[in-house]
Image 1: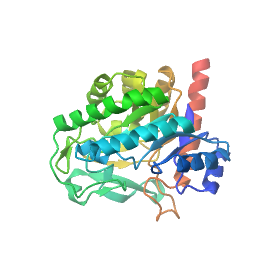
Image 2: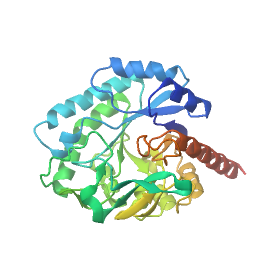
Image 3: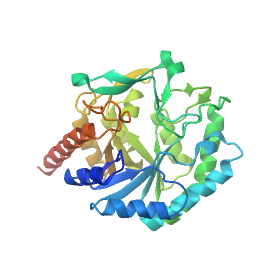
Image 4: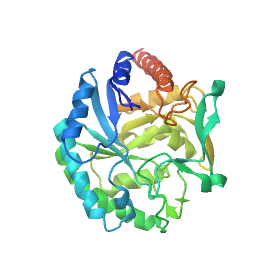
Length: 321
């Protein structure tokens, strides 16, 4: 498994810090059109013996989800991105198909162990929901049905999967967070295990894959290790996190303080032969980081990596005995 991290803020100090603790890969946000910016980031990362595993976040796909007049323009921009990723040697793009918003929470300062701050969601307070992505288009309140969304997704995949195959890039779908049936007048379709099985059959290809976000699948109420086994051949990228609760009401947790058997999850990844990027996600904000980006501060990530490294080593030793 490739220990992978987001870098927030994206500075040389933080890149060096990740290299020091044994991280080998980083995930970056879409930097915009053109190859030059991508290659500059690649050079910056490689100075610290790191590699870029994936691009996720801020992708030009919001109009694709909505199926509006800008659909074709965004498809062309995504095709250009895949070609640039081939040149830069970046193997994964992680995306979601939540129309109108990205991942949302209704509270950003729930208290976890020792007063650390985590995010939470309560469907009864959905009117106060805060989108945690700058790509959200919350001002678009036109209804969107599940059938329409599946149609847009199929068209998206049929356009991009052949290009992804040619470029050696894998598209990894992230589940809806929270995985509700509808949100803000728009259906959600990546909200169940069955939805992901349908996705894999929509356009069958090694380039059509799953980003297994443990926390979001936990929000669905499924048992994590057995679901990893069920979706195993299609899991190419992992977000390692946990929550307490279910899709309508939940809070984030420290990686070692939630209900999921995280050791069993790591063993399941090993059993399915997963060797791709795995990154701790949505870490608690520790003391002194209260003004940071919710879920994406650095100190909590250091704790998460230490915990993850211990689980991987223990599972490896058990496997070899």
